[in-house]
Length: 447
Length: 168
Image (cartoon, rainbow over all chains, first blue to last red; front, side, top):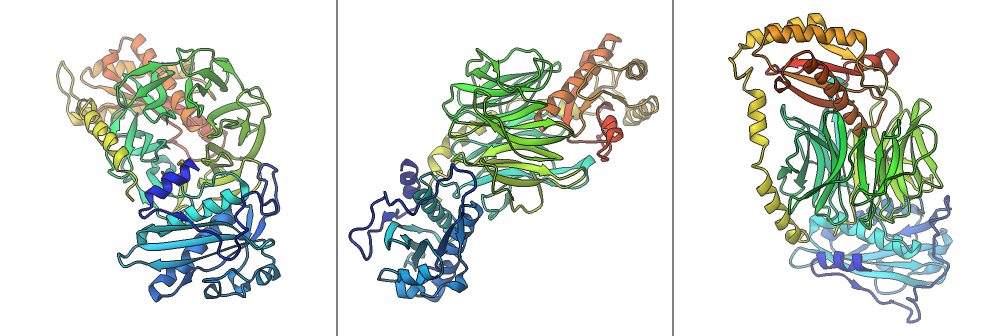
């Protein structure tokens, strides 16, 4: 509930819970039937009717149509819901305006859950959106909230509603009110043009953060989603880790190191960035505090030590190293002590990323002439491969630790694409991007 | 969106503070065109040196996931050393590259290792380390786009570029 409270504060005017409309006995959260267990792997998607929202005025109707559509699309992409076609709906939004839905009508079309709501443009021009989630079988309201926001913010309201529905039905926080930072690619491979790009999790609101004149790689979000850190090649200088504020576009080099710096990621505290520093061919892992400028060396050879990632509690770091003769995953304490190898399968292991839940580490595995994305427990046990391809690389986690995004090239010369897949290995989908795309990083829920 | 005000103030202050550091200095040192303490060298001379390096072979190749120089690579670098001794005013950049069969970050580290090995050999042949800069492109700048063993072999390379000439 903490997250929801902050996000409500953000939406000026705030959100409030809507009480039950029709039935005073409703609203007990422990209703068993309207529930999806997302830990079980393949689940039968729940049929859900997301009705257009009631809109009395002409100017409100676009929101009444579009917000529920974005909600339905979010829920559909999760693989856990099957939104029913609007054409099948028999009860009009106006007929549910001040009274409970006719649940028989919705049962008739096979809906287990129903979402309805209303739109009102206020005198100050801001949009007030209310929605309710109903258990069609029991006829009880499961969720109901009101949000008020500026008109251009309407997609975020839709994602927040989808998150509320996801949370009510799965018991887990959602991940729809999030963004992806990634690299858009164009041009021939020898002179590839790469641009830092940010978009909403569903591919909307694409914005380019760099103009393509400089090579940029491996962007990652800060915990507050306001900054990204990435590897930049600026004119003829050595490649270095930069940090950019997403809104102002201001950027700065992180640290004054002799060698190249690369493979950055924020620490959970948001102040430090962990990355590799390469000198004389050896790459070691350092942290750099963006406020105090203090730096700390965590590894001291041998060989290549890179792709570091903190555990969500900040107490450990997973990284890759070839110190044992081949590229493998290691976990060490956050002061650099007690490094121990955790990957023991066939092939080479790379790009480990700790789940925000702390329970798993996602990685890239290379072998048998191809690449795979997999997960293992932080002690190296229970390794599972989720997806493989000619090239599959660079996993990143949804903030609830249920979905992994990565990039994939289906063959030599093929354009890279972003792909998402459930941590269960089901529901693999291409992510909509404006063009060829690589190096995705998923933001936390937007504060 | 009002949410970002507080956190942004901290971040912006930090960014402003850092940006003046070494950015400028490194940029001018790299571009001033053939500058060298013991005399300058014309752009034409740089271009002609690059041409001679290309005749000797402006690149050396590596085995998969390796960074040690092969005997023919060593011979190529000996040719570079001779040309660099004859053109004492020229500085160079050594680029390290990897083929596409590796993860992005590992390949950046691997390319750096290849560039460093190449530099170390040049230095062992008497070339002043201060004349050499290294840069790793990992798998970002393949020479050959074919995804086959021959293409990969040509992409696992170090390339010598005379500083002050735009890289292609």
